[in-house]
Length: 144
Image (cartoon, rainbow, N blue to C red; front, side, top):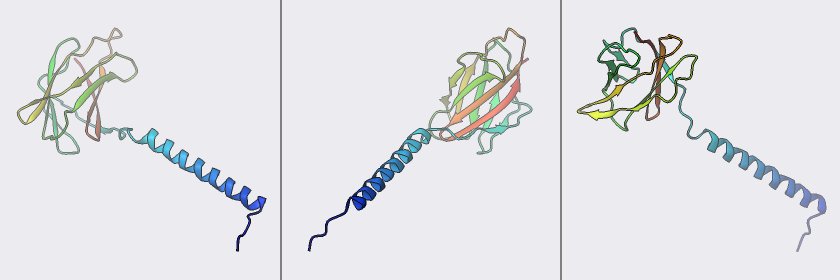
């Protein structure tokens, strides 16, 4: 026995299919727009970067000398395996251009030689954003 669907039933099925398609499209859009967003950075307090700073994951960050604008200094990251980390430098309230460095392997460590630009306002307050794999750390420091 064949049953015919009424117009109301067909309209209800059409509305349900459209609602399902919109829901599915919205979920796909949300996933694609959030899939590659980095985790919020963890703020790390480090009073003396020359002495070294223990990061929450157990790795250790250290500078070879006190950072000064326009003078190179070395940065070493110890106790980290995996993909090469990167570090970005910025000022808290000022655009200082592109200051991103890829750390290179050096034995069991990762290293980079950093040169920060001079700020025309005389500000010495910098932020270092260390990023690797799914981790991101933010460290405030001052130059001399």
